[in-house]
Image (cartoon, rainbow, N blue to C red; front, side, top):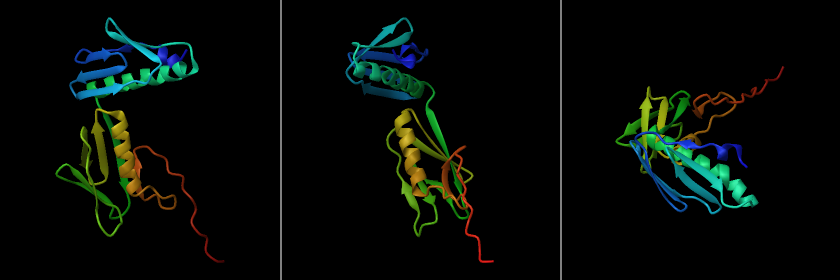
Length: 179
């Protein structure tokens, strides 16, 4: 049995959960999320906790046990507190700004790159070099942060580009000249 899957998920005060077979809907102060879980798990609500257990003792059920528990826990975390990813822009002339809700990146190309946020995600910029991606769905927030980073990934020689906060860039030595 999965060690993670065995743990009960506590439900915060302002969060309401509705279970209908394998579909889970969660509402909270930061929004509402719903997801249909894969076949092979059983989701029960007891007291103020959610308990996920495998439906039968097959390999597929055991594999999905911990996954489904983590997905539900991430949904509860998202609607109660939300998720934020911070990106740092490093390089001369590289900057970010907001145009309405859209994020405009100047990352060394001949034209600025405009990123349009999907529903449920907001961008914010601090000091033209720090970009915050926030929302209630962990998966969408992570994907949008990855798309922003993909505009100009950090390069190993000077470290210029867009990187996650705290990301360590492996640096390489440049060319050594003729002697």
